[in-house]
Length: 271
Image (cartoon, rainbow, N blue to C red; front, top):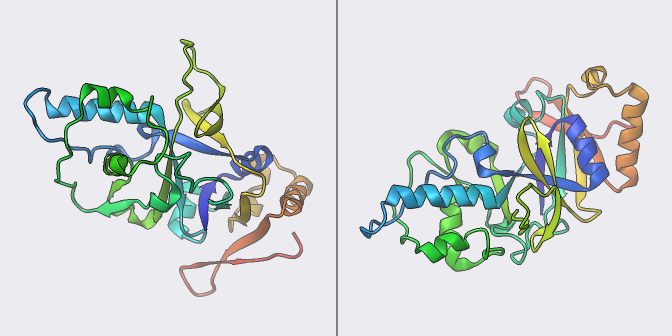
């Protein structure tokens, strides 16, 4: 199964060159209501809002989210995430990239369909014990059916206006298990091999994926016209595309379908 990631052209060059894909913390995503679907039963011992906030904090700091989508030809997605049609969409084989693996993901791609709802879910989850709360991010490192409802509530519920994204998420443990007081920039855990970079003041956890995981690249309808803005000379732009092809990646151009508000992909033999 191929799922898609909308990125800038510069980011796409880095992804292909390093064979990595970036995960973000829940608190750094662009929806301020992320994680607010978590509600617990009131057993009288600890206020439910305290438990819910503690769960969201631990979930955000211990796990990373990769946001993918089902189509490379969504005009709104191109505007919001594809650098105003000047960027790139990368097609990723989630099986080859180990993003469907239940042994290395809390939420594999096959269970990661985002649920869009006009109202917050009202069903309350059983309240967690202190031991269960502290285990989040330290002991939980792979998909377990009994934990899925909690992770689904935390990571997979979004309000209805976001449904244009057709989002599929992968959630992995990004805990380095380091005893150092400083942030470790490179580490390996049961979820994979990671390199942390800083982007616009927030950490991006870059997961190494196997060579051959990247199958398709779509160039936005305004990408070529804005190459000078990206500091890529035209000759280098063509060279980058040729390098992608030598890696076995199919490269497509995107354009508007004549007389329609839709996009189509095509192969430009002259590029």
